[in-house]
Length: 304
Image 1 (cartoon, rainbow, N blue to C red):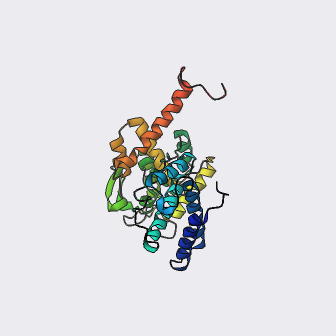
Image 2: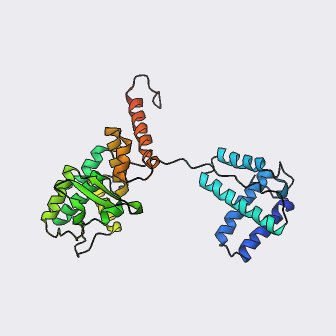
Image 3: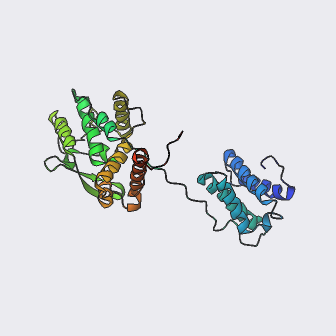
């Protein structure tokens, strides 16, 4: 379909529209190429069922989008196709006195499937956080890793921590989350132990950063990411490890053990429980895998 030439009455309005975008709106050549490809695909799909652009019905354009979706075109690509088509019809109305309602009006691309977050299993997390804390740098990093997994904090929250935010006697930490919302989160015993060891190294004044860079300042988010990657490689974990993976692992493991979605929502600082529900899908996926491997009447294994 893509190689078939378009009839002039389909092609010429698109050429004029793209010239308008190039000359008057000064859009980039890359955008022009993308619009040409998208509108060409729409035109080739519509040509067998409509006389021309101004005679296209909404149900015909909806069928084009649905067919592209069935063929596997990603939701993002479908959204771009519809955006190009809506922009084209707006131009037609303004410059070609096209009176009917645009057939693209009200059409939306299907929502993309929500990707499940990756997690580390508990053995991998244990291997990662239990690094040998035998000098100041590794003592700091052990406390950093323990706190990430213990409390499920975001990278920005950890980077901003000061010693005044920690109450090691109460085993809790106060963090400023998204939207300027403060929450208090428990700190596990292993993380408390690691943080006490870090405090004993000196420089634990209330206003000082918990995780310092050795020059009196705080470790930057980029530096924290680099330290997490460093220890993942050093501990033999070849999965892509980053701070948010530890947050995902914290949430998934906690939900798996407790089943308390509301508590996990509060601990993570999610405003909407719908954001937290992704971990229920992840937990079900894990349970389904266990079921398939263990139940005598589960699905047949591949290759059987």
